[in-house]
Image (cartoon, helix red, strand yellow):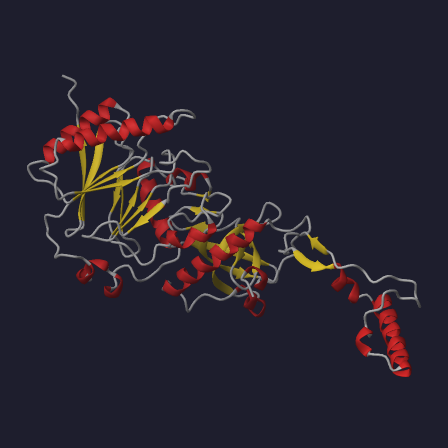
Length: 449
């Protein structure tokens, strides 16, 4: 039984999931009593005639006409019964499947697993203070509901207090409050507190056997985001940066898209070829210096695909294990501002410099790189597992359009960095030292003279 069908409804709702039923008209009519009784009587009459005449009984049960009733047996044709108009769209099933996977992952890693109660068991706890781990969903009206894999219940958030974090529809949070028969009067909402961040068995830095060589404190990865190859200033600045690193080259250059500043409806293939030819010309000047160096190009979804046929396949939105000297996840989605816009609650006195910390705490607590529901996300459901933050990487790289930031590792999250657009104010990029677990912000100032 699927997770969506296993959720009984505690509160009345017009959004009960139904699935399309494909059956045959013959099977439908066989359950109707008039035709079934008449058909059985006709078969019995034919059987008696066969026995008295001594003919072969092969014609039993296949009369050409029901002469006793004048009814013709229906011809076998297929009928599709579509869902009712008050049902969820089919995408909601995929949302619930995603909820089940993330909810189970968070519950297994929670430090408060023994405290949580399931929603279907709260009827015996009316008037008591309970704690549940559930997804925050919007109900039919202006109120919200909490939903886990067993049931759902209406939430009263009028007097709720929120711990620091970004709370949005579709997120999995911890709700504490007094339970009644149909409503949970919430007193506190908080992010799930998870384990496993600093545990030895989950720390990839302590499993050097997976890497091809021993770690060196001088290992470095230079990270660029939004490297616009059709911009002359960007090309000049990138050339000067490569020239500056020529005396002591890093191990890897990670170049994240977007690679084109303007997306054109016509001529995008020629534009892309010209832009990457400029990059190849720059790299050819350092072919002997960077002979053993790795350049990793990570295209953005807004970059034109290298095909001239339609429909063009989309680029992946997340890349994992792209480096041999560390485990790194790269996410190429604009999620910081999108989650903030979708929030139902944020701290009232939040400042712009506080948003990266709130975002990282929230995303790591969800164990998902894009925790918004599917109607906010452009994620194919079959690829949703790629966005799970498990196993945990050494560093999470967000190639987001938000300004650059560095959020250090804590007991609840790994090192999370965002270099920001290369051509934001100056030419900004980041240098990551995998062995030391350190990230340096770097800025190059281009002298026009």
